[in-house]
Image (cartoon, rainbow, N blue to C red; front, side, top):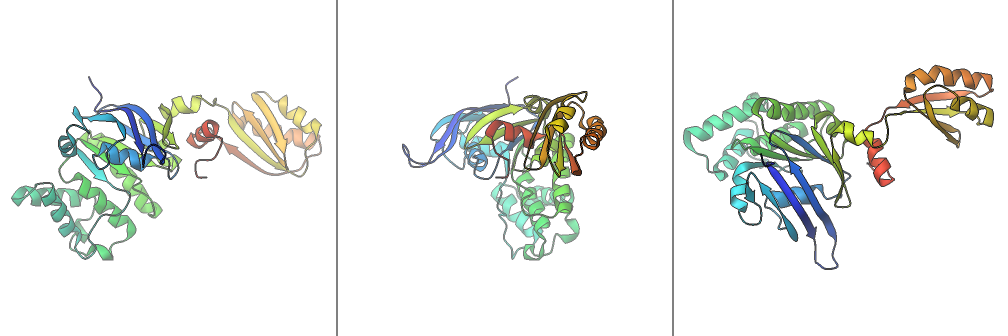
Length: 316
């Protein structure tokens, strides 16, 4: 069966041929019912890609086929299949939550009893029924985000694009939004394309992740597949009062340790199981006269993958 999203050689350059190359020849297939996350820092090309496959921005070259329809040949057919939750809040603050949903529902072509039913369903789904008749300007940031999501769901799309939906919200609202994404996928079978620069979100939500940087898709796979690129070792980081050769040599002899390096009062130990290696490392420190000031264990994650692939931290 064909993927529900097929992206081929998608490119966007502003003011060609010398202008900014925002997206570079992206190739990607996303299967129906999948949660796929674009993970990358701000300015990586995530929003530009979403805008192109939504039909909001014309590609410089390449194409994407969404549910069997080309974004360059049949953009209106694509728009009927998708719901878009933009990064910026796109609501009328002086209207109530219900009035906003009714307004956008009419833009989708809904009306009458069908519109009323869909608005009620969406309000219940985003857990804002009790606040439906309050003006949006009175809402918290998290409540506004949830209405923003609700707008994208009014016409019951097969695919929903969510562009950084948790930016600027409190932890409780973020948790609600992440649970909403899971619910859309698990209970409704909706395909979700999610963009984020938060490694934790991509790691929790995604069936697969695409790491994007400087407009280029540099890696695609499950979280496990991506982490396997850098090995499965934990990183044991020791802050010490001094570093001597005897200490480093002793650490290298610990079972499961694959690499040891030290500089500027910090020693990094790569080990198959960092928690198991930690007592042995403390013992070696005592034997070699080194005082350990602090210890932390960093298990392999997508942040480490990004650092490995790009040479810099995800949030730089």
